[in-house]
Every structure is written in structure tokens, then in C-alpha cells.
Amino acid sequence: ISRHSRNRQVGGALGRGRPIEQIVADMQTVAEGVRTTEAVLALAGHHGIEMPIAAIVGAVLYDNRIPADMVAELMGRPAKAELQGID
Image 1 (cartoon, rainbow, N blue to C red):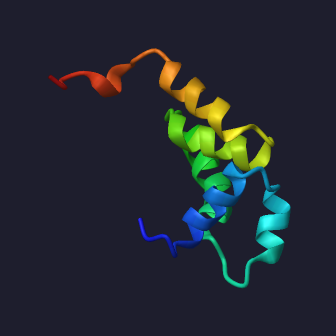
Image 2 (image 1 turned 30 degrees about the vertical axis):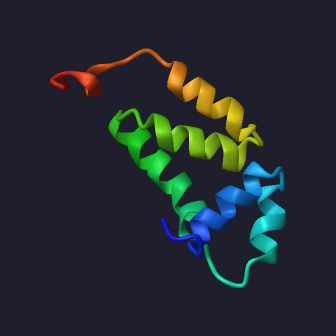
């Protein structure tokens, strides 16, 4: 991912502890991931599809969760069907 990516810039700022509202307010352009995460989670929920990475992104964006804590939570979740067939 380019270091100039808007989504990467948002992620870096979140990782440094800046609140999402401040990050978005300071941006001159749109970081599409911020706006689409909520829609992706709603669509996945409507269809009963688990999207653990998107859920973690949503928790960081909308619930003020700490990114490092969420990575640990994601990596510690039990393996599910997505790993079937991988050798």
C-alpha cells in the first residue's frame, strides 16, 4: 500500500491515538474506507456473514477501541471454516 494512501494515513493517525473525528476533519480528501466500513458491516450482518477484519476496523473507527488491542483480539480468535483446506 502506498504511503500516500488516504486509508493508510487514517490508519497511521489512529495508531498514533488521534480520534477519527479529528482525522477526518483535517483531511482535504475522502478516505473511502472510513465511509464504507459501516455499510460493509451492515450488509454482512444482513446476510449473516462474519467479517472479523471489517468488524475490527469498525470497532476502531466507531467504538474508540485501541488498534493494538483489536489486533490481539483478532489474532486470538478461534480458527473457523475459513481455514479449511489450507495446508
